[in-house]
Length: 460
Image (cartoon, rainbow, N blue to C red; front, side):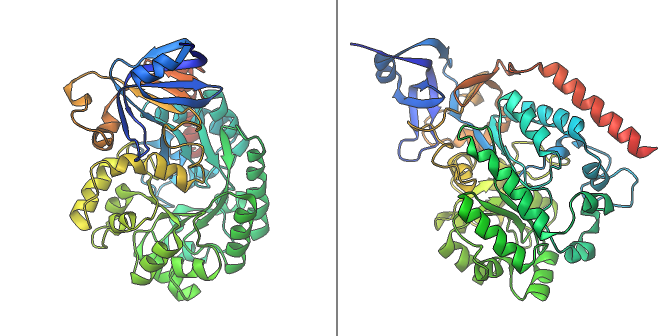
């Protein structure tokens, strides 16, 4: 039988596709050509149809689509375990708001490369930066050099800071506002600039429309942002209903809850993704189910800020009613990467309806891709999609799935299973747990050097 020649063949894999209609192949194989998946299935079937110049033996380990992190403030990764919290404002001379405002292209480039390494080592091939990067070109260039996907938008998309000034002043300072003025025209212009990246269909870093949210956008800006997102066929994203204080303030100033207000302004649609959404009432629930925006859930923050409980965890109910829900960690300062999947199971079981054990795996793959407007390109190992593939290691008995054909192990233990190989857009970017596109040791050393230099300059 004639075999088609492809770029890469992965075989001997315990493959979880992220496609619920055909979730599992063991032993399975994958054929990749020109950065796309051209064959996914049982090993015998794929190996009989394809040959390749490069073959990768997965060694029986778990193989899955690259995880997608849908809410990660990249600069915070350099301050994991810092002696101040994200809420530290003027109480300390060196705090998160000061550090956010003090970046430059060199710092951002160094931090970004180090963040890319950390994400790959945990099985994430795309992360979504939610509008807090000033030097977006440096960010995009660094991510591209590493070979990792990302999404980026206008920094701090706001035009009304009165709510933050009253409720959460420690999240911003004069320096942040000076670099990102509360001005609608500035926000829309910068969003357009980032969306222009999408003219290259295969660009690893893509743009979208971002509002900071939590009542910081006027009705006019919200309408303009929704219009731009629709015309550009990208998502509209914002923080929403994170804390009870924000919800009460938005009702007082704008007349409605965030979801109701967005629907009234034409900004609640399937191409809208809202982060947090911890504090909801029945009207919000009905609208979300009917309008189908995506939700990016950060269970670690819901617990950490003591929002859930006492608020009910509505995410399992919404998920079972057809709402696309993805997971995010938000700030790495006090939460480790990869914790969201396990916490989503615990939180749902304790304060809502228990998710199915495999649900977090899908929330971090196909649901996440859908919430970023990329579900037709990424999120599952499906023929025709781009080849973003993660091969884990099989080191001990807990890392070998048993009678699992949906991805439960990847929900329960993904953050603990070492990553061996990562392929992004058909290119191998990590082997044996090490970045191969750039010098990983040099990346880490430079990020630490830039972090220490920045801290020293701000402390004197």
